[in-house]
Every structure is written in structure tokens, then in C-alpha cells.
Image (cartoon, rainbow, N blue to C red; front, side, top):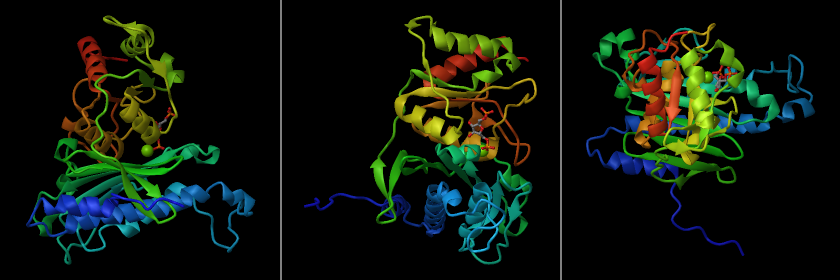
Length: 340
Ligand code: AHM
Ligand code: MG
């Protein structure tokens, strides 16, 4: 007979426990996190079904119901836009998929929070059944309620209230921090609940994995080439090189390295002098997770978390993962004044 489960904790119960540490809390923040979990479940369901689209004959412009087939990243974006801040807690939403931030009416509700997200990162991998993910960051509004402006949106990662990601892999996992440890929850699809599976994640101080798209090496600076060469061959005092692992899906690469120890690199290239990844919806939320798990994230010159965005879609080079390894990379690159 199946064993009766004991000590299961749902993500909602975990968030409520967090809320109880703040006796005066209005529940707005917990409600917002709940909205994000709900959106994640909907996206997870659709991502899991993605491979069935062809079998069901929906390869053209319309699906079997005669509806237009939506690209999954567009679908995920709409799910986030529709699910979040229903109680008026959110004043601005920023998405990787949307050119301009969305300013929400705050006549009802507190409008206290700003949410920025990448609804479906790595979506080019979907057709091959490779893991994809969602990334989100939550900031607090700074100005008074009636005058929400771009300044409220353009805050550094250091000021995040919470951030997290969902990885749609062999199972769906929700990992987040609200500044009190990094916690991971695995979706049990049979009951539709995220259950606490990884409490207080601590990433190894140094790792044995490096993740970078080496096809770009001719477009890197000489310093980046040297750094990657040393990672592969073994650093002085740390003999034995690292192993390469690159999925090409940031959330999945980051998640694996967080658990096993390792570093993800997306350096500048000649045609992308600021790298590819976006500060607000990718780099800063993951940097916040990394630091709260004992890791570190850098743009090669200093902490990602200290960078003040100049726009919603600002791009940054990203070196993120095990603290000691990323600090070593930062030291090498900043000493050389990394130039292409
Ligand atoms: P996306 O936000 O358009 O999906 O791009 C981000 C993705 C990351 O998930 C991944 O790490 C990176 O792009 C891969 O880029 P490349 O193919 O240049 O290595
Ligand atoms: Mg992305």
C-alpha cells in the first residue's frame, strides 16, 4: 500500500510562514507570490503538452479548435500579465517579451510592488524537449502611489524584495528567495501543488562545472579566452580542470550549477558588446538567488546586484555561480580591464 505522506509543506504554507514573521503584513506580498505560483502551474501544463502539438495536428496557423496557435513564450507572457497583481498590489510589470513596461492603475489596492519577468527563457529549446524556465524579480515601489514613474522600475538588484525561477524540466521546480534562504519546491502534478523539496539551498563555494557557449570564442576578448582556458585546464593551486556543461537554457544551466557547484558565463562578444542577457529580467533576479545561496554574480567588473539599470531591457555580461570561482573570474577580468 502507498505510504501516507508526512511533513509535506506546500509552497503556499511556506509563504504564509514567511508572512507570519511580519505581524503587520497586509498579505499583498504573499498574494503576489501566490499569483506567480499559479501562473507557473499554467505554464508548466502548457510546456508539458508542447510535444503533443504536432500529433494533434496543430502544426499550421490554427489548432484543432480552430484557434490560432500561439508561440509558447507569447502564451507564457500573457499568462503572467493576466495572473499577477489581481488585487492591485502591482504598479508596474516589465517583461522580456514586451518593449515597454506596463503601468497598472493603482486606484485600487496598494500598488506597492514592481514585478519584472522573463516568462519563458530558452524557449528556442522547446521543440527538442530541453528544459526551459521562467525568471522573476520583485521590487518595492519607491515613490508615492499617485506618481509611479520609471525611477520606480529602474532599481538595482540589491533592492530586490524577492526573486525566483521556475525550471520546466524532468519535473517542474519553483525556486525562490525573499531574503530568508533559498528554497526549492517540486510540482506534484497529480495534486497540482508545489511541495518543499530543497530547503535552504546552499551552493558549493567552488565548483567543478563551467557553462559557456564556446562557439563564440573567436568573438571574445583575449582575457575571456584566457579565463575560459584556465577554467578548463586547472587554476594555479587548484589542479584539475573543470568540466563543461552548456544547455543553452539559462535557468536550467544556473539551476544545475547552483545545486552541484559551477559557473555560468555569458561574456561580451564583438557583435554583443554588453553580452546577451538582460539585467532586470534575467541577471539581477538570478544574482539575488545566487548571493542568498552563498554564490556570487558579476559583470566582470563588479557585482551584478549593484548595477542600476538604464532601461528595462539593458543587457549585461554575466558570470554567475560558485562564489570563489566567480570572484576569481572577476579579479582576472577587471585586472585586465577586459576590452574586446
Ligand atoms: P532568450 O531569453 O531569448 O531565451 O535568450 C536567453 C538564452 C538563455 O537561456 C541561454 O543561456 C542563452 O540565451 C543562450 O544563448 P546562445 O545560444 O547565444 O548561447
Ligand atoms: Mg531570456
